[in-house]
Image (tube, rainbow, N blue to C red):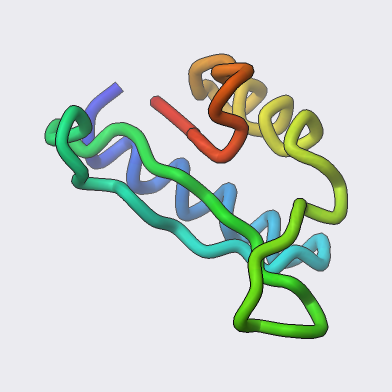
Length: 85
C-alpha cells in the first residue's frame, strides 16, 4: 500500500467513524518508525467532555474489523489505537 492509498483509506475510515457517532482524532502519523506515512493512531474524544479521551462507542474490535475489510493490516493486540496500511 502506498502512502497516498493509506491516507485515502484512513480518511474514509475516520469519515465512517464520524457518520456512526464516534468522535475520532488522528495522531502519530509521522512519528519515528512510521516515516513512510502508512500508519497512525486513532483516539476517540469523550462525547461529553471533549478534553478527555474515551473508548470508542462501538469498540476497538469493531473498528479494526472495518479497517481490515477496507484492506488494512490486522490489529496489534497491545496497541488497539494503531491502524496500519
